Length: 157
Image (cartoon, rainbow, N blue to C red; front, top):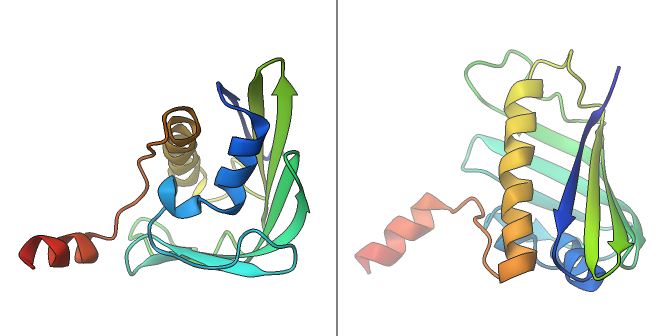
């Protein structure tokens, strides 16, 4: 079976793209970020509210070329899903390719295949957040998941 794969053309230098994948995850994916994502062997966790999280181990980093994350733990507590832990044991591979003055980013999610229950939800999510990543590296402004609890707190203070 084919693993989920998407190629994103970016009008941005490879250094900016690599930086987004290693240092700037809260600016394009989710504000709810903890851990270390810019050092091989370290781990980081992202949350989407209280019912969805993913914990990654940084398996490989090749500056301005590649980032590989192994999913150590995950919960997709979405009512329509029976298997809420499908991401565990999957691997996210980001390959950065210089194309003249631009960059091509190839995302492969090893283990996310059409027969996986969350495939449609997860592939929609990847499209949403890779669009945010594209916006972030091209304009400096992404559309990450926002922690609504914090946003509510800020408004009332």
